Image (cartoon, rainbow, N blue to C red):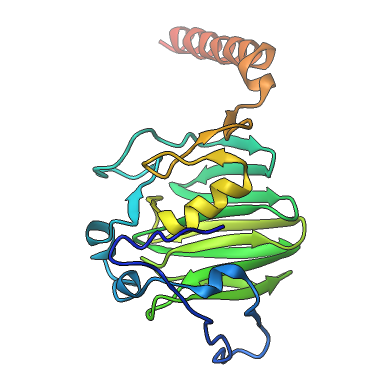
Length: 245
């Protein structure tokens, strides 16, 4: 199912030791097929900026809202809604800080990427397993539930596997979204979605892909009304200004 994606040499089949979790409130799982694959060369680069330029398994993400970014292809509008069969991602921006609110249905996957800054998540409801690439090249899977706070360090490839219908928030510290795909993980995410994976790992879809939505009322009659109201206020201001002279 997962293929041998380690371009530095074949991914080794290995049973990861996941019993070293020091937080007793978190459950770890060791029966997932991804835990049997081992990417030692990438593991040595986990948590360092070198992974973005030295690993052939790390490829440019399709979007970013931070400049300069040599891999930027298109910006992410805020506010907006991304929607597909997995659920929705609400992109929100206030006071120059970006936060995403995600709703994801049980059984789906997200991410398969890594960031040059720390990713923070808070779960409002539901349950999610998070895969993270470890320094020895193995994958650790940790389960989080309602009201858990999650912190994924920079340059750590990760996947969100949703065990229940889940609502969570995500943001990045320091602010600014940049991401690169981690091909071994991203291919699994694409396969779950029924996507035909292309050479760049982004994929060409058989199914409806991720779509950006703007609320219809903001595109139509409401926009006309808001524009008219702004003009009306402007005219009043102009008239008052003339009378005060």
